[in-house]
Image (tube, rainbow, N blue to C red; front, side):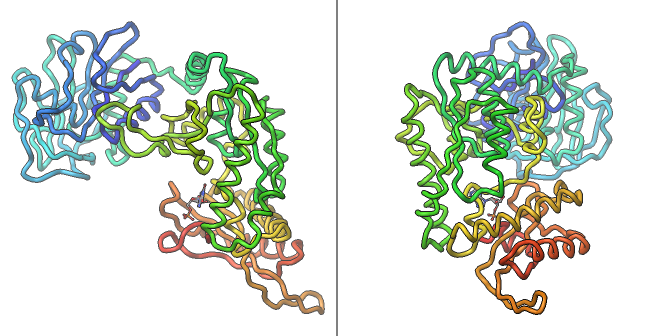
Length: 508
Ligand code: XMP
């Protein structure tokens, strides 16, 4: 395994992700946990940090003790700490260097194997290494800094350091460098797969939970499903899943998802039909935020009520994934400052239970890989994101059961149409929106006066920015006909061609 020592960089998790992507197992430890060699450890990576090495309170570790045992790679702060500890000079840069830089390779070396000259790397540092310590050699520089990569000359231990961040997406050949370090320099075999993650996580969950009972809200989404399946593999029916029908799910979703939970994944899950209670509370609410509040509050009430029915619940399971975990890790170690994000609209503090979050350090695509390993159907894993308040924020204005039924039907036709025309996977999210507008139409020889549905489909990476999907005209023509001819109550279909920003993905 590889150990990543965290000095509090916002990119530490990206290092871990890059290591896992190379199919090598890694663990992150806060820097202050004193280093102890253990069999199986193949190498250490020192992360970046918001600190300057010249700060009196700068975090420090004993690099010499480490390289006596395994190869070490210092990244950014890790590189500066290396330079400083061995007698080099690190000073504040005249010009701070953030973002794109072009590296020039100065030497051939196994860690640079396969990398090209003048490739783009990503920098983020206020200090620079001005002078290398004795017994070190330069491997690369950039136009603005004399030391971009270096190594200790062979002797007592293997030590590499890079000023840039090989772990970030914009360092084009960064992954190559990391792989060279992991495989050629540390001798890691690339055999750590999602199957290993499942085995290790299930074992860790068994230990963490023991014979306690865990309650968990399930939503049909990827994260909660994968998390629940892992927990269930560890503790079986001591996991109590709760899946609430809030009346604003998609057509047939409650029944289908519940069936998958029970029949395919063998989860101990209870389906709670709370449609009427939600409709009652939503009555007369037209403001989007008011609707969200009602749905969040009702969900908590129902979840708590269910929790009280089960005796001796001590823990709360959650499908939190890394991007949900708030921002960066502090130098005092991950566990102290990361706040928990509640996927299910925020559970109240009165539910004081310790959390079980097996996906806390994974990214979405990794969660999907783990989900496939667990045998979760693709149908569920490849779903578009769906907002917690569901169709309630896609019915503009007041919500009635009749309007929900109308939208469910139009939405189902739209989504099925996308799947049948092989377009579903080309868009990031799609859905239909019911407008509070009636307009005149003609069907047969009769005048109609019915609702309008807007279709939305976007391309995006993370939902923060999005473009409207350029769906083929033929498909739009087909789906418009399909909806108007089959959904009584809708006589007009429009397509939303707004990007985000300035629009948002949802209409409310
Ligand atoms: P917007 O509309 O803000 O949506 O561009 C971005 C992403 O967030 C989803 N979304 C929500 N998800 N509760 C949720 O769980 C909400 O209240 C909510 N509002 C928007 C939206 O579906 C899209 O994926």
